[in-house]
Length: 173
Image 1 (cartoon, rainbow, N blue to C red):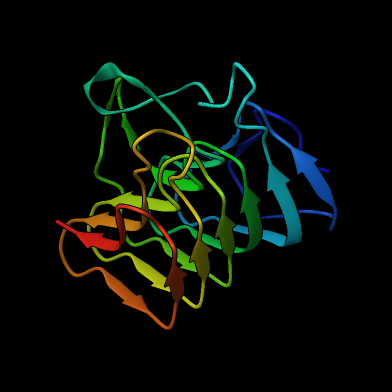
Image 2 (image 1 turned 120 degrees about the vertical axis):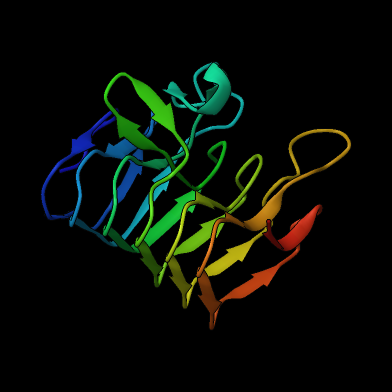
């Protein structure tokens, strides 16, 4: 059974259910599969800890429901609701955090109603496939948020349903 603040370091399949994670969960390994088994992972945006406590680039507090710190990981069959960002990646290296994880696969997820972005990946060779990503980025004024934000080289976005994200549905930089 998953729990708030959980750190995943090996292949993990959740028991199907609905879980609240004010502090999110993280994958801190390489070559790991997270299968949410169509579980609902949510957080109440209005709570004081919705950012998840993940320190990202430039040392500002950022966060997400699932934070990636590694390469060659697969996240699948997750239903992610009401977080800051649904899935966010950061590669942990020694004592600093740099936005450079890659070769990750996000497949068959539903990512909706998150405060900022649905998916935010920086790095190379990521695959985002067959996901439903909508209604992200409406909690602030003016509304801003991107369904899928990807930065890096050789990233593949295919067969996703992405709609109603106020800033952009897909942004590639």
